[in-house]
Image (cartoon, rainbow, N blue to C red; front, side, top):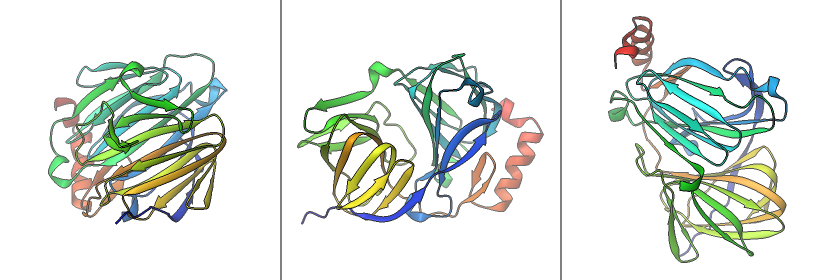
Length: 282
């Protein structure tokens, strides 16, 4: 029996800043099981270089994966393991912090428009202390499907059912099964996607408007969806939205700054390890 997903709850993004004063809009779901395995979504968007030029100087992480997707702009990743990667318009980068990583993300661009996203993904307890990993995906490697009826969809991570076929993104090696896609339209268009019925799913509208089973979403809003195997989306005019699904992680979450662990004791250990310089030895 086919079950269509509908909107259960809408969370508006809120303005804040991070790094060296970079202006962002944020949606977080650390305490919301319906958000799992995702933890937080940051949208970076500005036409003014003073809003992003400070970038994200070196800082640590433990216990999470980050997926950074750049729709427009040019940043450079560096980390203590010696990885250097350029994140260009249309590209993505994935990092699994595991036991610890120190990295920076700094703008190479000195002017012009910036629009991108950083998505925090929880790591299951058995992955929180494994060695860190990093990989970048240049724009030409991102899977894209386009037609007049549905517009254009780019699959960045995982896979989904589209037009009776499976479309898979380049990022497949994540701690839990998940999917991240970017759907863009130029006029009133529709799309129908098949998702894993047991996964949590949500949609974030970054441009225009969208409708799910008659419920309207506005720019800057995230919808948490009911369970089901099919998702029907309708866009109004020129629109854009990120679509997420993932296997929920049924474990306690304790969050402190850049660290996400399963207990207060593990958070304190992460702080102590970082202060002792151990992250640089991993």
